Image (cartoon, rainbow, N blue to C red; front, side, top):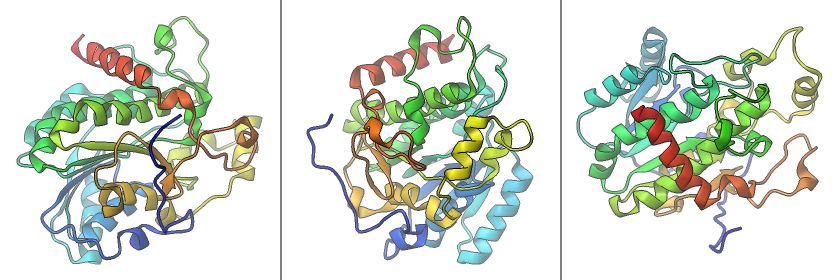
Length: 319
């Protein structure tokens, strides 16, 4: 699948965000973490702040974001933690956030997301909601922040994906489920494949600007992300997945994100997919039915699909 040397680190699925960032000094670095008012976004932002970075929590609920920012500042002693409004399915909100940004941006963690919405939901543009939130909103944000990232010299983009990317490639003929039956997990999988393909293409297109992008599977963490999969309406398939999943702590779940955002072990590395604090091996069907299936599907690293997705996404946003 790839001809490069696989990246491994001393860290594992048991490692925490604090462990992977120990000894890293981010003083003078500026970071944006989307969806940082809950789940691993909070822990990612906290770890970056603890290492000295100026951190902006890009969140839908600014009140909640400001509360989290204050807690992080108190815990870390870093007063340069703030919250700003960002609704990824609202193009004007994305534009406003980017327009308000001044100066360089060293780290962009595209962490926010929605998972397996039980019924088909669309944005005002008619876009399928998971694809719009998980991919298009973050794609638009990165495009608008490109100059700030380039100004940093060696900026990193972290694209939070999932092993669910194996459930669907990007179906270019019908991304938004106009002519095919909606399936919650396939739609989620498509959006997570898009997260990986974005990292592949961003690292290619923006290499001359010193920008690298990598994608990751954080592992299973019980957070608000699963709010649409709980209760009596939970499907048998979802129940099977959840009952057998080896859940990890929030501190462990944020570790790979923080590794990609800040570790010197990833200097100059881009266009790859990580899990358990290491570059993932190619996916094989032998792992499909395991509780925590590992590996990256070939369709998520396909450079032709990555280039096509970039063009298709840009056309959607221009429409």
